[in-house]
Image 1 (cartoon, rainbow, N blue to C red):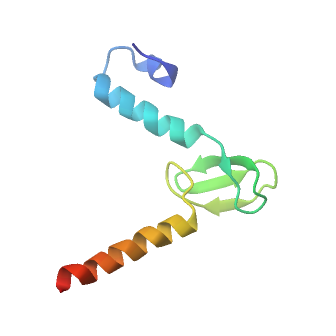
Image 2: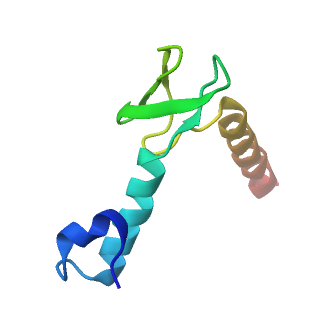
Length: 88
């Protein structure tokens, strides 16, 4: 059963592909928290560019969803530490 924005594809492209696309589109069309004013008003302008609808602040983030800098830094730190563990 199709739902949401994937109805426009009908029975084309296969079920898995349509549902994956639906998950990505749901993430990118959602509103996120603005890092400047902390309001849930940031929307995607284009790939990696986000704009707050309240304070008009533009900022960079992930392609499909805003990734907080702290989360990205933690992931990079874990990968860095794992590279040292592999060498030993």
